[in-house]
Amino acid sequence: MRLSCPASKMTADSPGAVPIGRSAWLRNIAANLRHDRLLGLVLVLIIGLTVVNLVWLPFSTVNANPLLFFYQALASLPFLVLWLLLGAMRYQLRKTPFLYREAVAQFSVRAQGLLVALGQIILLSAGLLLLSYLASATGRPLMDRYLAAADGALGFDWVDYVTGLNAHPIFAHAITYAYGSLKIQMLVLPAILAFTSRLDRLAEFSAHFGLAGCLTCVVLVGIPAAGASDFFHPSPEVLSSFGAGASTRHLDQLHTLRTLKPFLIEHPEGLVTFPSFHSALAAIFVYSMRDVRYIAPPVFLLNVMLILATPPQGGHYLVDVLAGLAIAIVAIQSVRWIARGRGAVRSSGGRLC
Image 1 (cartoon, one colour):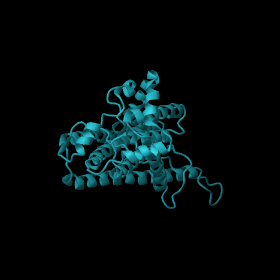
Image 2 (image 1 turned 120 degrees about the vertical axis):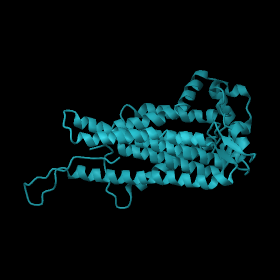
Image 3 (image 1 turned 90 degrees about the vertical axis):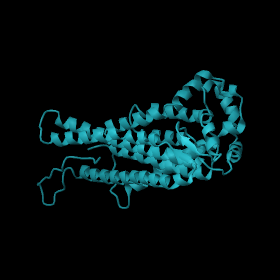
Image 4 (image 1 turned 180 degrees about the vertical axis):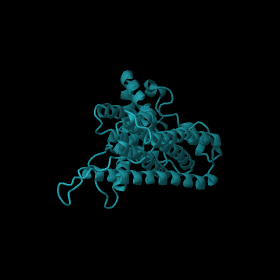
């Protein structure tokens, strides 16, 4: 979606007069350039993931259930249909003057932006999911002892941390719900960006998600790990306040993949231990809401709780969390550099004109 602003109005008070709306016009050009670069980045990531997966799949023991990924890809079809319908409505509005035409047109622009972002996220998620399974189907030694040693060097004891949280069931339940909010935030936060007219920020959101996911999978290839729960083997009581499957829900599939026997993906789980993609996304969520009044503080608090829940719920080491935050920083800085481009006009605002 391109951003649009009214044409600049000229004044003829003096020769060579500057257009009244020149500053807004330049900001709109800059926003369009940033948006086009970010759209290009997301398309490159989607195409790259597709190519890598198709090339790797024949040489792997992983078998992708065609229906699973077909339905995931099909899930983006309604977004495309709605996007086309909204585009047709906007075109028709140009020929149909009525009182609320501008408001309806602006709503359509924002809704189209949201549909594009959600469609991109669905396609990126499908590619990243398959890539994480391909990367996990390896016989290379697990690196858990090094990750645990790194935690020890930082003075962090995973068992003590989880035991301490487990002793406070109310708090443990609260951060468990925060950990489970990731999928909800993936839907709600883009909608907030779209309907507060932050379409350039929405394009950044998709780019941050895709780039952080790709970087996470690249690191996974070099540093396979099973997680702290598998390494320390704590008693079940240590995780009793966090619900069934905490720290262990991915282990059966991970160890089966590592036997290098044929494996059919039917019930996908998050397999990445190092770095923590949950932590990376938590940082990206907070960054995307950084100046949205009344929304930024609760989003910050929710994602701090999500990060606190990452060791017990995801079986992550502290260094996994720190690496996830580093991934987010790299993704954010890279997207910022790509969006600006060489010689790009810098914009002071992130809103529609």
